[in-house]
Image (tube, rainbow, N blue to C red):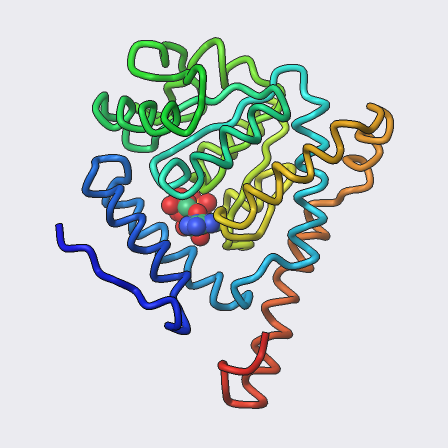
Length: 262
Ligand code: ATP
Ligand code: MG
């Protein structure tokens, strides 16, 4: 595959580098073709948000870190896009919070599962759940291969982080009574709406922010962590994210330019 050189002075260098990383991991069999489309959807919302981590996202990051730290059995779910863009962040967050890491794919394939496991292990993961036969349990609400999970992982988790997740599965996990945390740039997606805590941010920024927040909060008492969660209102936070996009677009529409406004 020909690798393109992206000059660091290019105004959209970061976005292009992320895109290249996904294409590279697509060629390695980690990202699915549908994963590339999903990324395009995310990118569009990142553009609208100004490609930055908002205060609004940070509020959700803090609540999510508190939820992972107070969980009895927290699990971080990794699909192809999440592993390609955030393997190191996933491993770091798992270490800080004591969460397990499980491969959980919309389009399951033994090869892709193994490739994602290898990538996570090369980023430092000791154990990766949900690979091949290990995903022997079924979630009742969803059909086909998409319902398979690891009985030691997501099935018995009380808190699950499912970044870039599909709406059906997020809904099913929430119906099972789990605290569902997601990272999703689209505040209107079904996943964003069904989750208990939605971080409206790009996974490349949100995962490191989550690991830092978890590290800081790990020294706090359980009561304080519980209060952070009960003070958090996902519906309100999502409304705020939509309002941010709305206000930003209104400003852009007034000025008729994108370049100078952030
Ligand atoms: P839903 O099933 O939740 O209604 P969907 O069908 O549009 O949403 P999926 O492919 O099921 O989308 O899920 C992928 C989600 O991840 C999308 O909402 C997309 O905006 C988001 N996404 C893609 N790339 C990123 C990224 N880099 N960071 C954060 N979110 C992203
Ligand atoms: Mg979907």
